[in-house]
Length: 282
Image 1 (cartoon, helix red, strand yellow):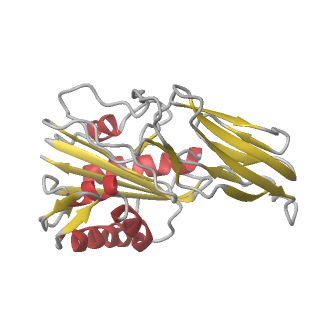
Image 2 (cartoon, helix red, strand yellow; image 1 turned 135 degrees about the vertical axis):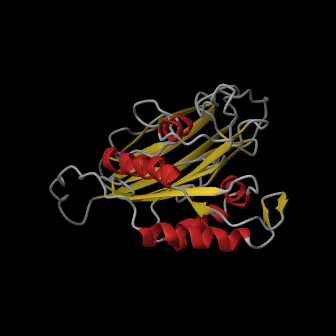
């Protein structure tokens, strides 16, 4: 979900990788772009998924399916999700499948504007091999990200920026190294901890705040800002490598306008590891 924000640029394309990475862009003086804004879709647009058409799950497991519409990530309101057997597998309108009981089901996503365009996912659910563990206590607020973790992410990002590279179809020259900024780190760590504690994954906090509002609340007087988020990766090397493989996230990392970086990391939640990069320049 790449996001970045600058005075002369609009919202970059929303992107989710299979391992759940995200990032973005928007102008500080303009209305903040909304991840949930609907986009028009032409009749006959093709659908594609970042997941196998046949899914094997155990009772209690979940699987997020990310759909592209005509080569662009689907926007809320574009798709309708249904299941052939809710007693076996349920699905939310955001594409989150949950295995309920052993059996088989077919989950379908249909383009609302063109019902003849749809994708089917065959879901086979098997019984869990062991009783589900007792619920774990609510996670305590994560401590601030260690200097070592933040420094590792910074080092990997600067290594990437030191070399010219292609982010999708866009070529970037080598960019100046970033430095750590305490205010950006405060915003990044706060969001990582919140996602882990409340077990969600989004640029928008559950209280409705955007990354622009979170960064502004720290007093960081920005000229341009951006954010990458990710979940599931257990090391700095894994998360930075995943971001670099995603066009939107790669654009934020290689953006020569950015000068400073804040890093957030928290353990917990359904994905066990949550990462946030907040970029900025003043």
